[in-house]
Image (cartoon, rainbow, N blue to C red; front, side):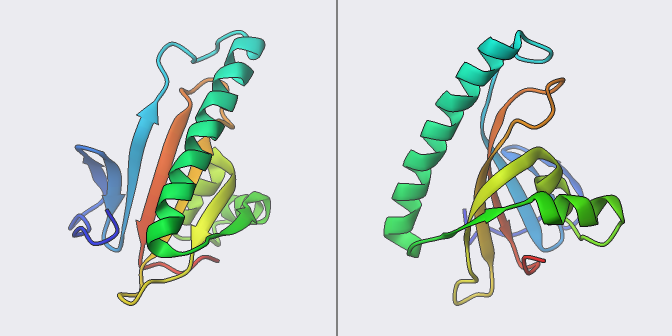
Length: 134
């Protein structure tokens, strides 16, 4: 995933969405959790977080240890129009991410659970980008 070509233009793709210099893979998407009972949604969110931790462990074996990053500051700056994609969209959906600094090819990577919007499904996301983390 980290070495794949980026899309030529913004839009959806088979595994997610992206644009020039970035791609966000939707690795898992819940079904039927839009506006679900908060207790059910919270329980499923925990399942997604456990799956995220497992994914991070596997990726850490390949890419080295990530650093953990809360995205609230980026989210606040996104509201002011200061943050580029993919970080703008990622931060509005994800509260906390595990982030890998650029590899030899200059690409950042991040994993997070998109569960901030109760009117949307929960998603396990993997971002790969040439855009530096703000």
